[in-house]
Length: 181
Image (cartoon, rainbow, N blue to C red; front, side):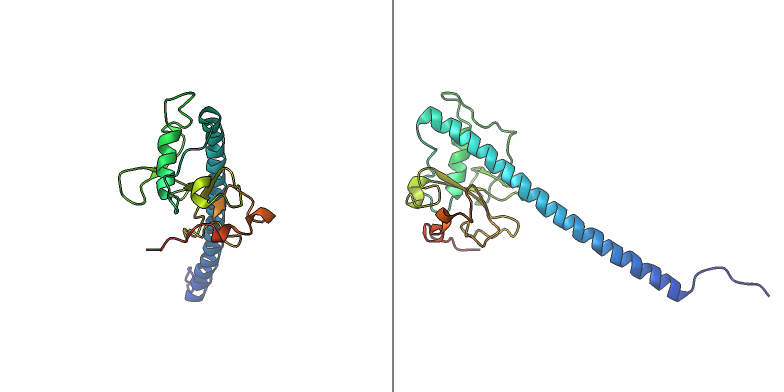
């Protein structure tokens, strides 16, 4: 009698099931790692912008205007222009320092977060000088979910202030929420 060498259908299905479970675990871990890396990269971009804004403010005695923009998109466009000025000690940012995007497709670049979405910029005149950071500026990334939630305490927005601090309690009422497309 000759014996056949090979695998049974049950053995093949067991191996495929094991490989599927392991793949799912690896993909989930990779997704979490990617999200964390993008969050950290966006926080680093915001820190870089804060430094550039402080140098700009030292030279011009104020932060760049956000052009009366309540959503922060035009503010981001203006921030990009102002931080690249050659005046005084500028430029405060160079073309290769930060990625840009054009979310409203008007030909004006906005400073982008790690997901390629605009980081919103508001000068203190355009949010009523309310807390947090009532005398300077706000930088807001929509964060991992891509939904701009005005930096609310419970949102995943990435901001340049402590969302859990006592000064953040009235921020949600400071600016109107833009309509989502």
